[in-house]
Image (tube, rainbow, N blue to C red; front, side, top):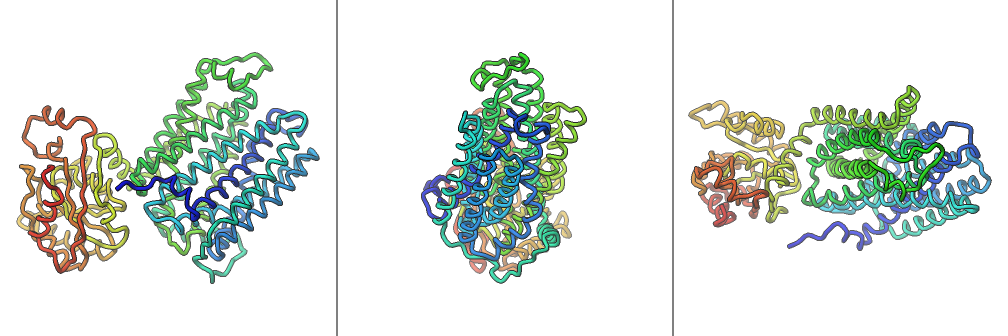
Length: 632
């Protein structure tokens, strides 16, 4: 049966009012901030004597300053209080802030508008922990990737629409400032109305005592998150994305004006393309991940951020647009300039690969952190995000002050991304290992998983499967919704590339008793320990690859395992791998390649769990054979 797609959530009350509330919040943030940036960039002299480049980097820094100061408190509030009521409070606050901003627009008072920028930062700080803690509370685990994808898409479409409307409204003469003031107040009111439709979401820690010491609480939040290594490094990866994005996006206004020689419409065009990229990348995550939290997409996204960031530098050098002094062309004229489409393609790809990078990280954090501490975990992440974004603004100001051009700043950012990615993936090689597995089944093979829901989302179990090729474990690993500890022949474990993947996946090597009795006994001890810790353990009871395509006799090791650890056994069958280059099929290799073709079709069929007291090798072999059928 086909699964409902992620957009079906928009028809459900548990998701739709929340989606529109956060969409309108992102829309309003950028409706206001973009209008202010456009005014400062293109009409600077009537507002301030400061450098436009300085102000356009200062405004994002001021917006995120409240994240540093108030995220710890916001996380506690989100864990202590019911989320729909807290959301309505935040939306009332937004209405008040936009009224203050309206006075600033009408009276032409820059510092009142900057105060409103800080106020909207407070609004976003309070809403952030609520936003990302709400999703795992209301959505099923298999809906998290889709829900996060739609949410990120909505966020960036809201950003896009806010940026476009903000840039267009504020330059309308003679009533642009009045239109901007009215629009932001109206959007805040619409967000408040949507918030009143959000269903009740009980507090996970209603007895929590609020600590108003934001410094101490911030340190406690981050230290708590550090106890879960994968979650904490995912938080750092998330914060790095915001560093990258802040460093690049803050340069767009001046880049559009001074390097592309465009008017404010050129700035809007860049933001539009970037936001479309992030939105489309976020939505593609569900399809590319197979409705599970697929962290293999994170290295894929990181590679794209570096490749297209570097190319944006070279594309900027090659751009040969109009350079008439004092003349700035509109977006439509800019599209006709030589090299402009390459720049837009790079910006689109940076956004799209950013979506591949950020959505799985959000879902992984939501899925693996302590449910009673999720809002404070998100708050800790917001603190890190804020620090990274402040650092990005500071780095941009320093480097530009040292004489670097904006294209050179793009190049530095892309190269820094490569260094940071290598560092993070060396600390948590699970990301890179999952990427290689994901790459295998999305380039060389098409894998269908039948009854994947029979693999338990939590708790210990033993998986048994037929053994057809050297890539069996990688296919199962990529298709499974959670990490698996594989038990495999010590010779396969020592293969150069595949061995690295299996060691990274914490596979358990085993040898026959006649070859290495110590290693065999150690393997059983390691298996028992893994099951005791609640892991999934997968074994291939045949003990060797099939040489004929038929299923060999199942050995008694699985019975020994469940005798020691009373856990269910789940039979599985791989179909379509016989004849693979890494199987032991003796037919001509070229015939096998052409017969299989590119993107060959595979299947993993999952059977019903077998109680430990009912496990026998012969019965399991019959079950696996029935699952496989005639398709080898």
